[in-house]
Image 1: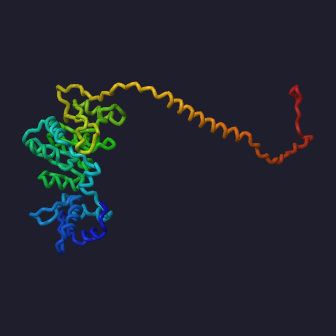
Image 2: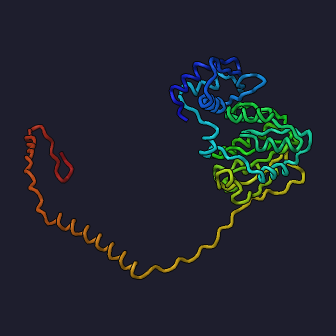
Image 3: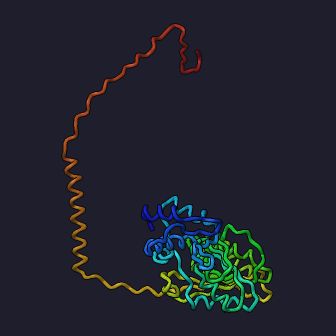
Length: 333
């Protein structure tokens, strides 16, 4: 959203920050202006908290607002959803993740790239405790509002600590990011821990880009199952996905990893085209070829322009001198 200059000036003038707190000073704003400013603050992580009488941020408020002031624009939570930059995990997929993770009360769970908390909420309902990591300050604030422990940061930059019994996640997919995120997430597991993640179908294909990851899954005794077609349609995408389960340590009874495959329907023979249509296509091609040949023939019939005579350089041979040596056929000088 491009912020109108007058609205941006009002925000700069009214906003008073103190650490992660922001209060709006001065006379009471009219409802429409307050709504617009509140949407900006929510986009960068600010959440109005009545008990504090302020907008609270998961990070330093000045740091969160710096890009807004610098660019005069912000991507609101509404715009993120509308532009399909964020695909919340549908309930049936979340439930399958919870089932595969085998959560029990007291289990400590990590959810990286937690979004707005679809998975985190289900983990809590299962009786486990969950720590969330989310780079978007707006979504980090949503998670905090829901009562989750959240660290606002890019997950790939967070130092690993092997402190979790489970990692349950739905990472970003773009350019193999899901493989990067899962590999990093495995470092957060205890030796007897388990990771369960939604991933792009791409990981099931054998290629140079997936070779290392596939070897890792197979070495750990991981399992891979296909998610039903159209499972994410309600979230705004039809991208095919799988759920990958990877133990921190290969179990003694681990079975060979089976990678799902998609059945390709047999090709159907195409019907013959209408002979009249085929003939018309041939005639059109012949006309085009004839026209090209006529252009070439006309060019050949035109007389070539005269070539100007070039002067010939004459280089005189050196005069014979008495000092020159001559050889006969007998090889004598």
